[in-house]
Amino acid sequence: MESEAFYRALLDRLLSVDRLLLSTHRNPDPDGIGAEIGLAYLLRQKGKDCLVLNHDPLSAKLRFLDPEGTILSFPERPPEPQLRDRTIVLLDNSDIGRSGEIEQWIAEDRSNLIVIDHHDGIVSDMKTYFLRPDIGSTSEIIQELIEFDGLPLTAAVARALYAGLVTDTGHFRYRKTRPESHRLAARLLELGVDPPAVAQRLASGFPVGRLLARRTVYDTLQVNADETMAWIVIQRKDLQEYNVTFEDLDGLVNELLEPDQIQIAMVFVVREAGKTKVSLRSKGDVNLLPAVHAYGGGGHKNACGATIPLELHNALREFLPVVERCLP
Ligand SMILES: [Mn+2]
Image 1: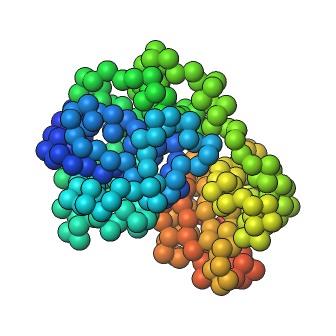
Image 2: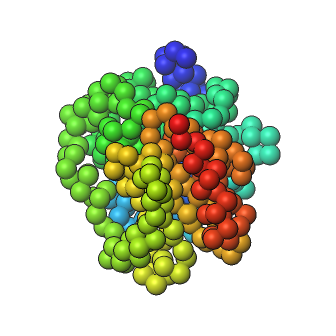
């Protein structure tokens, strides 16, 4: 797909309406937040009536990305008449079910919906779905859109876009890191973004309980006999004890892949009795999709998940051999 045609079509579609509501997925992450702040800036500069409303509030540690309070959460929403008859723009989220309460304003036929996303596995129709699975973050899509338009960025918008870019590219380590990712970041630095300051904010601000919960969770670490697979278990009671959320422990799964010989990492999450959620990561050519498809799960070959309809002990006994078959 030609980038120019993509951005022309996306900009035309966005500018064809006057009232918009931008949103992302539940528990907004830096990429969703960066994309929201960037796109709200562009649309407001174009004179559009543009609200940004998420189901969940920004976590305390990410509030620095929105110093002007652009992003509202559902409890802070304006009165109903101000919310009706808007085009809903979902950013960094192709799954309406993950938009929380925002879903109520999306028309059944999706005629008032625009999705802008970079996740794999959905087909772009350039009418409702503006998808760039070749790009590492939605924030990069929005920065490219703003640059396509020619609008100059501000320092605050640049910082939010930068946080989204570095988070979703794993600070330029993940597969979708492009030469252009670095060029986009370079232009944000020229606008005054301070990389160590942003990295420090993104890596700090966690509650002490998170450290204590990690200790409990790491106590569950298991490695298979030939040290190619590692897994841990997170149970609700471990989190409640330390007053942390499941989201506070996001990213733990990636740590398990740090040793060279570990090819597959898994986190088993027990949120409710009789169901065990598993989130998986793999390296290189190790394709995990056959394992999660057997349980109705999805994602992409190196990062995916599923829900196993069994309590933990049986889920482990049944699922681990299934995953092991993904190894070459
Ligand atoms: Mn993203």
